[in-house]
Image 1: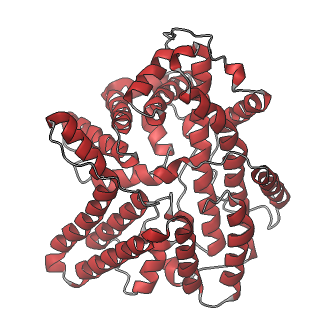
Image 2: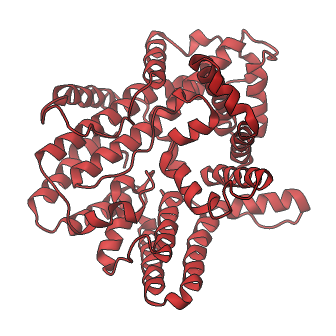
Image 3: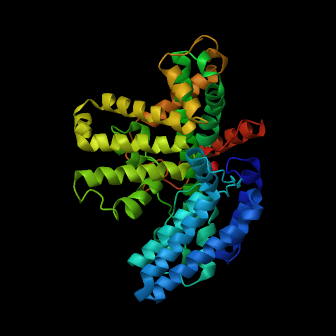
Length: 461
């Protein structure tokens, strides 16, 4: 069930909120509603989600009760999470890779990827490590832990909410009109980002990436890439803001996940602003335990390369994602070698333009269907198309898309003091911004009712 769907907006969400606010059993309503939400799209994988909750709850309790064997219980729990993720997401990819390298003839399994498995397995791993480190107490109630695992606002595509970030709110949450309205305003922002910007740019991006790359002029190819660059940002940032807003409505404080990453002046800064819950997860649970930057330059470069190789694989089981991770890791290493200092001395606009250029080139690997498609699109970007006038940009990008590109770029590049999903510490008034939020939701509803193109990119991760 998409947040940006008529079913969710006008049936599931109002019914759920009415029960949540009227009935005293908040966690029971939340757990049941979350399971219904997940079952709407993947009913056969509800047992898998509950099995993940059982495994992580049991391992967490074992670590807390048996400190002498805590490291063993931790390894067992983390191994179970990784095994689950490896089977569903990487078994087919590994079989194909071995067959290609060794002509082994291993049967390639065709496995359906469960919704949100990349997110809820990382969520489980962070919980076990935090319990082992003593950063949070193990949750003694399986019911509360299962509610955390199934929490529907962040279940499918994040943010990756660590248990210690909301541990206190699992038992008691502050609800009220002010927080409900603040959450609604944030949700409306995310919905508008998704429906009005990302959906509008999705069609030209899909058609230009799916076109014969030999018929794309340089301008057409770059416009297609710009459409995708803004689509993936507003698609994922919009979902994250909707999740954060829903969290506020339910009494939870989810961490921000984006802070205008396209305004970054280096790739290093980009990753401090993009998908913050994932980049901080890799930093805290992989990069720092590997030694971070404390063991000399060579070890630092190795750690960065490994982390971003795995970051690419986390996003998808394909060589294009591997190369996307390597691309970002390589530029982080180059910046660590001294280039970041040079970028900091450049005018802000020049550093931003250079960083956005590198990020956009990386999106080619991320978006392309395979390696050949990626290389073909790079060729079009470089002006190497055989028939560059065969697919003019005007055939896919009209006035609406051009206006959306302009608005999207302006909103993405203008600097701000805080992430879009974080409410101001002192709101100017309970009703401030509500009319605009209602107008956004109404406009989005009209767009959705007309059957607008409504994909969601991160569902497949």
